[in-house]
View 1 (spheres, rainbow, N blue to C red):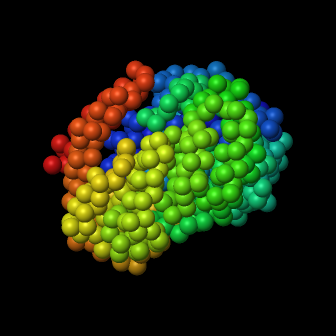
View 2: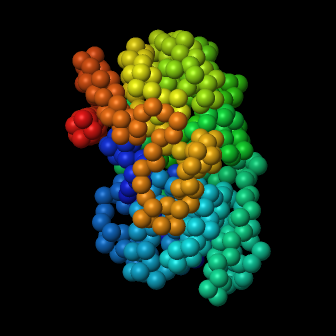
View 3: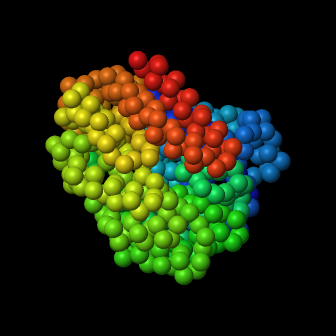
Length: 470
């Protein structure tokens, strides 16, 4: 049995386009979800071809010919809320030109399986984590057995859509197969934080134990890999794929401080000369953790800061203070690591005054990078339910069913509009990145032509976007 997995170029719903002008140019990250799926499939004896259209810089025609040459039994795609309809257009095109059955999975399928299966070009879907249901589906497909009774599976039967929405999260994530990185060209990937090629993304945990009102990662049960298992994957990547730099995608890598210390000790004991970046909160690190991360090769910590306004931070359920933010960023910077701060404008209670104060705050912090975004009410978040209570329809369900419903979601319970917030985001980028100290620092630290190109493209995009928003 053979399956082609296809990762399509990144195109976003308009609610996320304030992100697009930056993220499209800071680098390319491997399609981690599809790599995990590929590993599951290979364990079941399936031959897999993974096509990353953007990273490989190939056309639709090239990708189609590759699929036809491979002659798979199925083609598979990952669906996200951010880009559902753009990906669906790719699915429709491949479906029309190959006639092959289509299997989809991803976070959007877990959220909206019925709406997803309303499209005839999609034949099967996996709702939730794939480790348990996907092998069962593959065996039934291969042996031409009925799909009835397979939990977490959606399929069509005589024109009827049947969906079992049972979620089956895997308890022991140390048992999960490592992503099948041998299926991609790891040298194609990197971002502006990358110090050495090759580069990849990793996960050391699933879910999140914190309760930020704007994030739905806390809807998944938090499960962390053991230090040994996680560093085993780092070592395998180091030795087999020549990967020297990692971006750890956990929402909060430092949730369990003892596990972080154990991971750092494992990396040092195995003498793995690697670099990596992590995401964290300012209230779950201390100087010991920062020093341990630095000694193991961590070069960048990204902190969820969001606002300088204590009341807005309280309403976000962040549980942090501006003083705590300043202290944590300062001692992280003193350790020699780079820092990035995430900031969000437009949360309930936001005013022009609070936005201006947050911009000034970002300039006072010892940050090397900053990301400024508007609030977007993601499905299954506390803030989305708040928006629903204040008159918003189930936007993401309706958008999934009908692309014509696509629109910008206006802010709720603020004295600023979405348009005003977008203007302040542009101003924040200009003020943060076009400071002489930041520009000179980036010039001094450019280590490769590829990084120079990424920084130049990112800077051009910021400037172009800022001019549009004036």
